[in-house]
Amino acid sequence: MSSRVTSAHLRPIVVALLVFAAALSIRVVGIGSKSLWGDEGATFAFAQESVSEILDVQDTHPPGYYLLIHAVTRLSASETALRLPSALASAAGAALIYLIGARLFGPAVGIRAGVLAVVSPLDVWYAQDARHAALAAFFVLLAFYPLMHTTPWSGALSALALSLGLFVDYIVLIGWTGIGGAYAVYWWNRDRRRVRQFGVVSVVPLALFFAIYGASLEDAMSTLTTYDADWYRYLFAMPGFGSGLAVALVTFALSVAVSWVMARLLARPVWPWLALVGFAALILLIPVPRAYSIEKIMVIGWPLLLLTTSWLIVNRVPRQARPATAALVSASVVATAINLFVIEKEDWRSVTAAINARSEHADMAWVGDLPWLADAYNYYGGRLPVSGVSDPEPVVQTAQPEGVWLVASRAPRDEAPSLLAEAWFDENWQLIEEQAFYRLVLKHYRPPPELPP
Image (cartoon, rainbow, N blue to C red; front, side, top):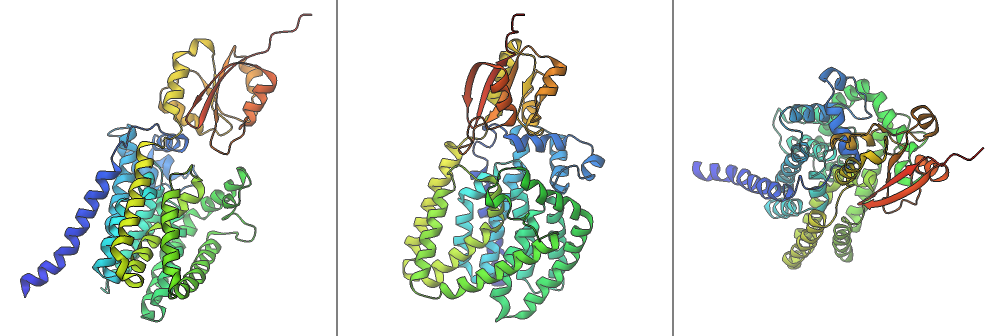
């Protein structure tokens, strides 16, 4: 009996370790081969600050992630080193998805959810991104996992993980309350003590977060309006929200409403199949040029989709469970392979090398309207002085450069000129040459010839 109990307790741990190892082996494939993109360059730049400066919250994000990368860069500042924490967090998240699924719904659901997490194209993409999303998703899962157990320390461990997660990134707030709505709907008619426990666990971490980083959250919401007018960029900056508490409450309420409706729809015969087909289509769409803002939020809620999908397969289409699982895994493998081997990132490495190789033709580099884009250029050792403001006229009048290399964005929806600075140079200076890179274009300008008197 004792050996059986020991074996039963060890089996989930062994499977979780296998899931972690499989997930990590995929996430490290070519992890340092792609160039850092603009926001990853900003990660490196913030991590170079002192600990006191990072804690001063100069960015719209809490400082936890930058403190971690600050420690990492003391050992190595390579692309691989910068991205490795995300890969480790994502692989650990896959193991937690298995453990949560197995604990809530049984081993069949847990294993399917874990396998789908291992090959998930969305998770693999963000596992190779030196930004907050993968670590934030991990802490949301880590905060929910203790709630799967009814021990005296479950609530305290969950609150601690949530506090650490909020210290990493404010999107943990959205993940916690969004998944929390589904969690509340699931337990409402089963064990309402679990719902009350979720509420109690939320109070202290969220109160501390709002007290310490509330202003940063407001800044993050307001900066969304500095970009274009796409609806998803305004989603969390709509008039009337006003504070992080409102965001939390609205996210929770929307999740409860959607989860309640979906629970009733999925009880009907045709809806599980529609949901599975829709999820397969969503998987295959992941490699399509990304809308970063919306996918960054998607990766936080992705575990809920994986668990729900696995539960549907086991409980709603049990006779077709194997082919349905195989189809979703196959779609995930295809999409992940495309992400790993086909889709690139903004090629700041090649752009900077091109500028350095021909730096004698100009004496200034211009990297767009957003100052932090200079961080990727500086990471790759750009030799020319760099500027990155939207109005070049005062700068060029003061510096009087003989030539400028301008780097402009060419994301799929960008129309040329994509920058205010690019439009100014197009109108006022001579374009000498132009070279395209992935999602970027390099343009060489010279001042117009002086008019004869």
